[in-house]
Image (tube, rainbow, N blue to C red; front, side):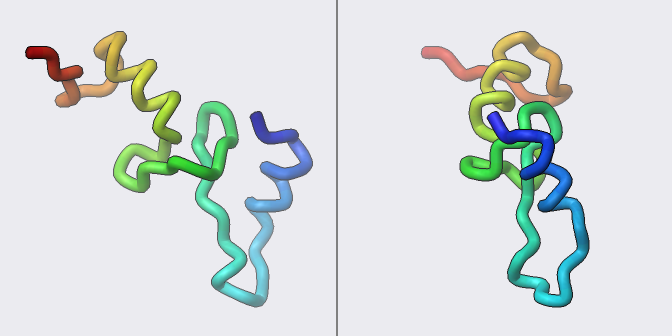
Length: 61
């Protein structure tokens, strides 16, 4: 989990656009980020399993 300092640092605007960091809005994780949902893969799976993301169902066969 990201610390509050890391989250605040990533929110600051930088003069260099390559420094921008996408973070999960729930936990602050930056790796495994899904742009479409603004979530990391772990939070996405939790919410999809519980049916809290509209239009997403966990596949099973």
